[in-house]
Image 1 (tube, rainbow, N blue to C red):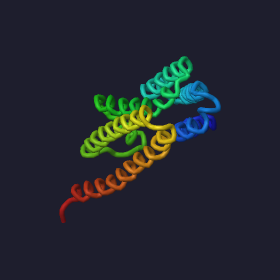
Image 2 (image 1 turned 30 degrees about the vertical axis):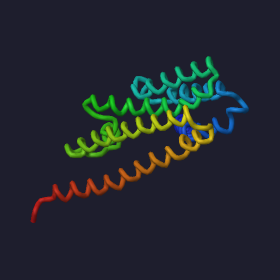
Image 3 (image 1 turned 135 degrees about the vertical axis):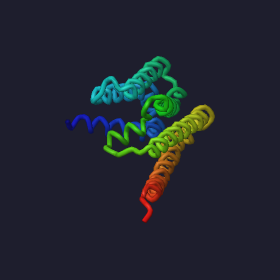
Image 4 (image 1 turned 60 degrees about the horizontal axis):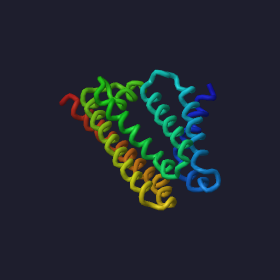
Length: 193
């Protein structure tokens, strides 16, 4: 039981610190070393997953493993810089593909959390899923620009700090708006006296 949260913490720490680890470590250990770390962590995360048939888990594992093999084969610093691009694109595609399902990924998450979902809330989660997908694709394009044309330090600053600030700002803004939206829906649903 304790191992599963530990894997989640490891994956989260690795994902958040990846650009900084690359910035400070690529000269010492080379790009292929990071492939090994990414592959091992992805395999451990998949092993700890409750549902091994979950498409999200399979897509991420497959993407990271292909990336890791390519990085070991090429030992390319450019490919190393493309990891944040790949992750943003994969997660965006998962969000977009969930829009074709009866329940999008955010709606599934809300149901798993035990939330009661109204028809309005279902529409809201569809729009929000699309917004997150588009933001992640935009993030991937900016990260691609930094990977191709910026210095390692500039790339690490954007991918290891600024992109997180942008995503956290969107998340916080959405939480504030969601409270307003829920409050508005409750007022509209309240019977007139």
